[in-house]
Image (cartoon, rainbow, N blue to C red; front, side, top):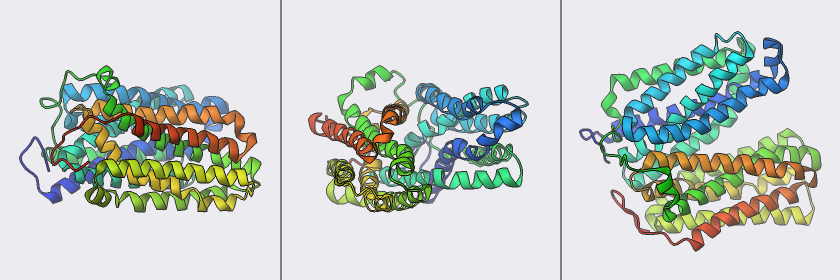
Length: 405
C-alpha cells in the first residue's frame, strides 16, 4: 500500500477506493440516468428528435475531449485536487442543466458536463494504484469494473422512475446532490486520497511518448480491442435479434444478465489467478478465451440455427475473457506507462471509446445479414487483440510490490 501522505490503514484505503469508484459510476450514469427522458425532450423543448439526441451525443463528445485534457492536467495540478474539482464541476453543471429553458442551452451544458465527468474515469486508476500494491490494484480495478458493468442496466431503471415520478430534471438533481455529498466527504478527509500527481508524477510525460511505447500499446490496445469487441456486439445485437432472428428485446436482456453475471464473478477472481499464475499468463489466457468466445459465436452463426434464446449460452465466454484479463491488463498497461498513469488511463479509455464507436458504425450497414456479419467483425477485433499480445514482446516493467510475469 503506497501513498504520498502518511501511511493509511487498509480500512481507510478501502473507504477511499469506494469513494473513487462512486465518483466514476456517477460519471457513467450521466448518460444512462438521462436516457429514459430523451424521447420526451422534443415535446418539452418544442424541438425535433434529431436535436434532442444531441443531449446524448454532446455528452459523449465532451467526455472524449475531457479524457485528454484531464490526462495532461493531472501532472500539474495533482490527482486529489483534480478529482475533487472534476466532481464539484460535474455537480454544478448537473444543477445548472435543470435551469435550461431551451434545448440549445441543455446541449451546451451537456458538452461541458461530459468533459467534467471524464475526470473521475481518468484519475481513478492512478488513485487506486497509489492506494494499493499491484495485486491490490488489480483486485480493486476488477471490482470497479464489476460495479460499472451494472450501471447501464440499473441506471436507466432509476432514471425512468425519476422521470415518471417527477420530471426530466430529477436525474440531473440526483447526480448533483450525490456528487456534492462525495465532494464534501473528500474535503472533510482530504488526506484519505493520495496526492500523487503534483510532485511525483513525471510532468515531462506526453501522449506522443506513450504512442512510442510498444509495451504500453501492447496492453492498452489489446484491452481496447477485447472490450471494444464485446461492446460492439452488445450495441449491435439487439437490432440483429429483432430484425434477423425473430426475437425480442427480452432475449437481449436475458443474454446480458448471463453475460454481466459471468463477468462480475470471474473478474473478482482475477487477483487470485494473478497470484497463482502470474500477470502475463492471466492476460494472455483472458485474451485467448475472448477469441474462443467470438469463434463460438461465429460457428453458431454458420450452423444457421438462428435462435436468439441460444445467445445466453454463447455470449458469456466473451465476458469471461474480459473478466480474466480486464483488471490485470489495465494495471499492467499503466505500469508500462512509466508513472504517467493519468495520460495512460486517458488513452486506454479513448481507445475503447473509438474502437466501440468505429466498430458499431462499420457493422451497421451489415445488420440485415444477421449474426454472421456481426460475429465476423467481432472475431476480427478479438484476433487483433491476440496478435498484439503475441507479436509485440513486452519490455520488463517494474512497479511497487512487483508480481511475477
